[in-house]
Length: 522
Image 1 (cartoon, rainbow, N blue to C red):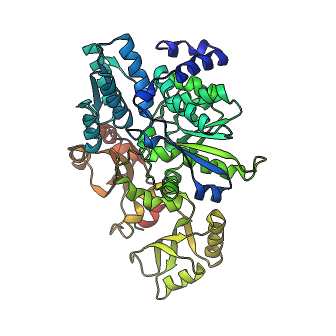
Image 2: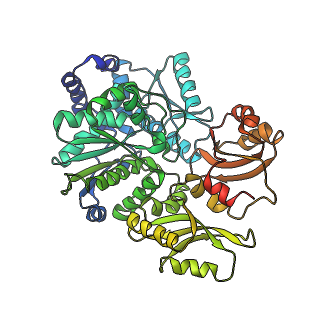
Image 3: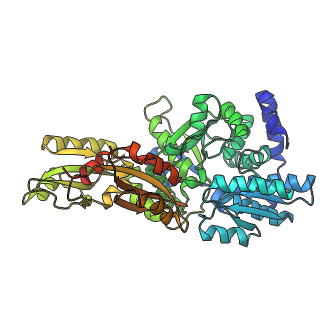
């Protein structure tokens, strides 16, 4: 099967399913992996009106499904080249899967990890027997180094997802799932590079073709959706990093070939919706999923809302894969901050109120007794004030419409910022930080790498050439932090060359409404 990935585009669907089916059914993954439970989510099922089941891949020895594909691949390596060494690149779950698999099979494994990888993950790989090499500030640099290292040392490179053997190993999740529940209507599978979607989809369609297979991606890292639209894999310019386990710019070629044949639909979800799904998993099962691990459930919830208005409104049997639980603890702060927004149980607004006594009391009266979850305000002028306010919603979108009507009828100027990422991530913490005079200011949002010297690189490249007028940093446990920075410059063209030289991902946000409302003068 090692050469299958180079020829599958020439196979019929039937031949392709037969070849993968044989590999999946005969896979030796259980020498390292375990059969994971399929748990019922009772509370969520009652809320959605469908039977919701969660495939618990967080129960694997490395807390992720990645062990399956890694072991299947390394078992093939051991059979064909008993004395071979292997090399891979990963900052997370693939690294641990390869390390444990290599240890079980007596294979020497070197894992290249970016220097931004949290120490807890580095320690976990070392504890599993992997030889860790830290190189580069991002996965792409680490991966290129790993490929060259394997070539120079005569070792075998183990890809994280775009490999037929890896795909077959991940497909064993579907084998278990259909044996645990053989009357499913729809299965939701997370998508990063596409390995688990490809493996599960080909198996499900071979065994029960009537079961719908839906891939779920973050809105800001939707490489499969982009590939489906283009008819071939494409490289995204940038990806969001909250769900770092699926932050992949380009889907694998073999993975896409299988996905376009056997995946029925692709659903995308926001970071807030992922946070809400993490909370649902905790509420129902007292389990804590990593963001990528809760991705599939977030898609299931979004899909169930669509079912309400369709001919499939009757109760469905829905299953989602909880793909991993390797969570950085700091991420929970961000999750708790955003889960209510993802569940549509909270809305945030920018509202202009008169700068006078009793103004805030009258505003609260307008809301009809609804709870205020957040209120940010700093005196700015003698006649009006801009407030950043969070409002508790008991009935989701329907109640949000009621609140906006109340504000309109009361004559308030307002902006609904519930979907404004800049407002929720940065501006809410900076209300009142207006400059004393109007500035010619260009404002940018950066993905700031978490490694020693990153700030000095920023200051050396930009700080000596441009006056920094604004700087706010947030990190939620990822390998990069989110930075909002402003510079005194007349136009983007003036500063663009320096930004590009910096080498960090960035986007201009000078026209963002919440920034203009709360952080500018005049």
